[in-house]
Length: 302
Image 1 (tube, rainbow, N blue to C red):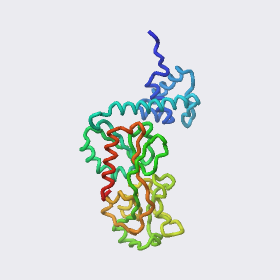
Image 2 (tube, rainbow, N blue to C red):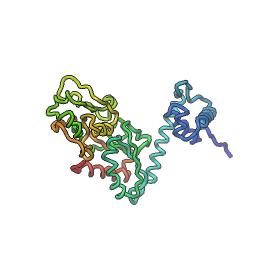
Image 3 (cartoon, one colour):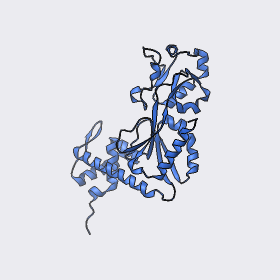
């Protein structure tokens, strides 16, 4: 009987290696894999011994892939992605949409707009096992960290399909108690005398020029009273009466306890996209969810 070549065919060790390469340390990889740091280290050492190469440079600040490690990582990354795609296509029902569907979008859009509507979709398609990953960062669809994404900028990866869903704008809101205390701004220039709440770091914002309110109607940018790195957090701060902020159109359904101020100020528009990998082009689960989104976004209440 031929001996098994455990080096390159041991999927457990390759999975551990891939996780360590992405995490940058044995400790973080162990947390992801639910293994001890020593167990992770032993798996990597065993893989290195079987290949007769070092896969990582070990530094006090963490791990860095060697040249051989980079080669193995790229190969394993590609193989795991293809295996995940194959699994999805195999489990796709020929009769009706069923199986897992993981959706990712921003914390604000997922919390405010999507989750209240997901019940209707799940009742329509009970065979689809839904899960949602709310993250303001870009989740890697190519590695199947999620199946589909609702994003507010066009994807840069060439192997992703995008479908434009809707163009959105901003509206400016304040709480009644804030306006009672500080007054109602009548013109954009009046915002110089008001407390503005904006996004934490405009350079890292999920949408371009999110902090346009700081320069609306003035040549000298205003200083905000508060920066929050999450749009839903901005909404909660406005609702508390702290200040005035610009919120996207999709907040209109939950902003009934707020007052829209300066209605002529809509801010720059931004686009909403439905994004998924090329491999899921013919997935029934993806298609019915896309059609559901288009239907709901076309309704007057977004």
